[in-house]
Image (cartoon, rainbow, N blue to C red; front, top):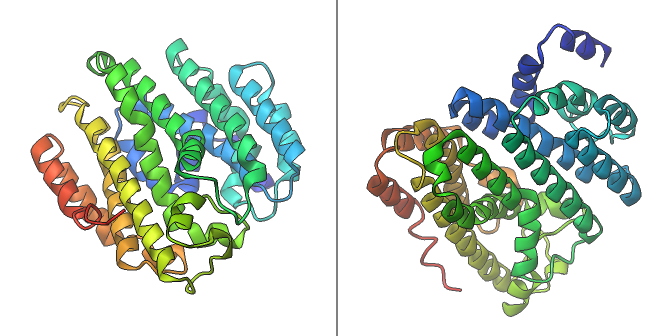
Length: 347
């Protein structure tokens, strides 16, 4: 840690932000640089703020009370009401050894991240502050729900997805509107789709990571969908489930695909001249659709690694969407083709 701190003193805040982003997220490290420079800086910062909130929530060594305390303190730090240094020095020693080195690094260096946060204009800061507050408070409400019993129903799953991803869609929309007056004129319409965009991406992650969550004692699957197919979600086991389990899973794939369709429509509302913004959205959507299709092909997978898309899939997604980035008709054709079998799933 001392070696890392010595390195940080030689980096500017922006250099640190760029550096740590590469370590905490491969996907966003790929998509965020496609944004225009001014947006790239604030979206990178927003992601790191969300990652700090997520690190608190995911920690397995801290009590619910400690997590709630640090979540509230972090909200105040982002709002400028408490010192980042005090927050990070109190939280860092309590982090679980299972937290990644990058997460330890990020918590230890919250201060340079917050300095960047506080450099943004009023609308940008308001968007970031609102997102962190809703996310941190929302995740705290669900921390005691981390059991193998799942959540009550699809609406409850949607509420969880809103706290961890839908609100991020709203935040990004505000940042896009601040950046581009043409997008700002469509703010209301895009806000209607923003939450669904976030839910589509989050549901994809939940469906892919079901067994990783299971091993740590958590489940975000809706009981009502599984009950309808005669399955008790509490008793699920990797590689050893009745056919009803597969049917319920396929139904959820279809629901997630529907949200990703809304994500595509959201993206097509972005002016065609804003190529970077479109790529930022399209690459995430494309990779999510391919993940859902891989799960459909291998419904009995026992690890997220088994349904993780390949680097070739990523390169093809980047290549095709980059070529068609300005052509809405072709983009719809690509989306429908990749998800053609997901739309045929019977609910």
